[in-house]
Image 1 (cartoon, protein in one colour):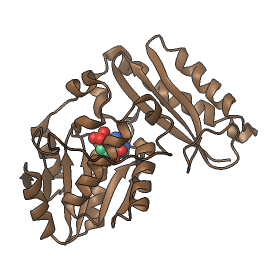
Image 2 (cartoon, rainbow, N blue to C red):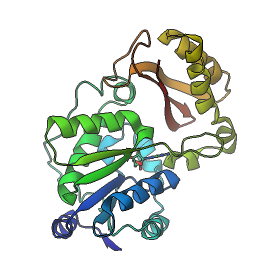
Image 3 (cartoon, rainbow, N blue to C red):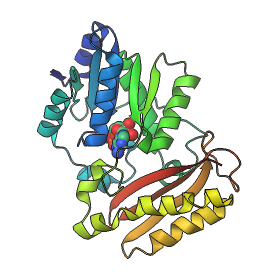
Length: 280
Ligand code: AMP
């Protein structure tokens, strides 16, 4: 496994590597990331190259404290990449990815209007910009993303479609802890009492979804059911709780087509997200 810090050197290596499958991450790798790397290994098969990027992308953070507190266990991350069969790891140094006077940024203007796009200004501009750069640096023919960040996945698919980026986007199901909490690099920052409380997020979503077989179709009822579970927590603060169309990500009042109940919120300063499909 080769670890490369310089983005230009990474680009040159990838150019001569043949078929590259990319897994973009911000590091602090957990089983969710490792599942993505394993999937990339399958897609690349024997002869292809699996490239992982580990970069805590400053321009996608809306809260400076969140960026500063983001865990960076680089040694353990590199060992995990090696174990899962990655061939190349890009670990750009701070400042290496963006010119000080950079003046181009990618904006998606429909799918990112709601949910995290509404409560984290500039977040998806930062995501699109770094992901497009990583696609160009890696020359990847495929890239693997987690469905956990389902709005991000939808925005990236839209960017690839609208800009004719020659890459296959592969989604991977969310990997969860045994108690249902979606794995996240931010989970290690939860206080013990918050971590004990956190399975509530998934339970709230399931309680709402379980109304579907009884014929419930009102978005407001799904939201209220989930909200009751969440507000019973002495710790959790809801950021948003919304039903959106699964394809357009626009809010819906009633479930007539596949939809998604999505939530975000805080334990202290730690922001978590999760979602569940509502298929009528
Ligand atoms: P991050 O390091 O949080 O930016 O995530 C890097 C990639 O891993 C993204 O495509 C995420 O959607 C994906 N990912 C993060 N957590 C999980 C999880 N629990 N299950 C599956 N994929 C995940």
